[in-house]
Image (cartoon, rainbow, N blue to C red; front, side, top):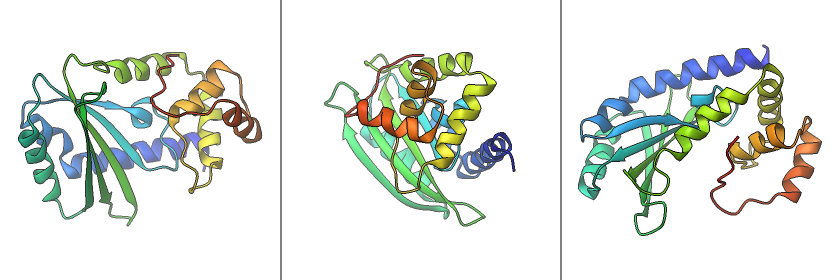
Length: 194
């Protein structure tokens, strides 16, 4: 199967997870604005089965956030839920991570970042996804998907690392990418914009 076909297949499967888990209506039920970001939004979902949402509310209610996750947890396909409270940091968010086992017995990680509207990263990653999608060419899309596909399951690499290396710095092979990573270590949120 061609790498682009695999990516398309992963997109379809991810949307099945989103619909079956009722992620969007659950968050909307507490008055939240739900935005898809990350590799699913940009069509660059490969081996790491993850789905990323940024979820905004004009004020922050911990009880509302927990209520949404309680509803999500009622789905028998949700196997685990974790959260990290970053409300007192510049990110001004509550990170939710849920793991969903699909009909094919594969585990999907669903990252739902509940963000205070108007805070530092409000809209940043949505803009990033738009800009990335706009600058992707057939060649760079194929290179990014190939690099993601070659990455061992045990290696944790942020998507933005692939995108910077390929789009900004012209990396075209996995060996080049590993060398690039050794020269560009990442410690926190990367604010590069394509």
